[in-house]
Image (tube, rainbow, N blue to C red; front, side, top):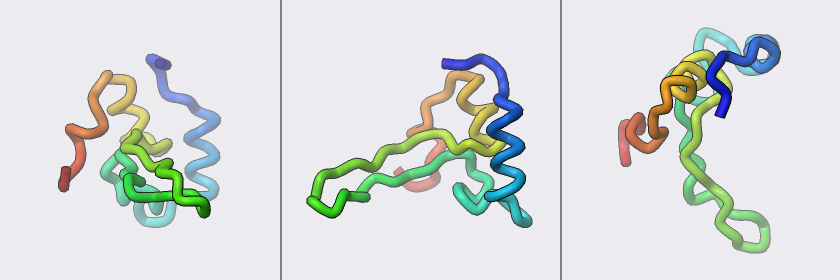
Length: 72
């Protein structure tokens, strides 16, 4: 686990995923893809921190992404 922000990832995020807010997580910092399945039906979703600055800060602080969800 990295203990610092990744500037290259932030630059990529700013270029492709930033509008008025993070279009990946809605500025919550956490992505919940549980329920996502491959075309063959294999579950592949997870609850993870986003690549946005909010998600990176939460990851650095060592939090649990599940504890940050609004709906668990």
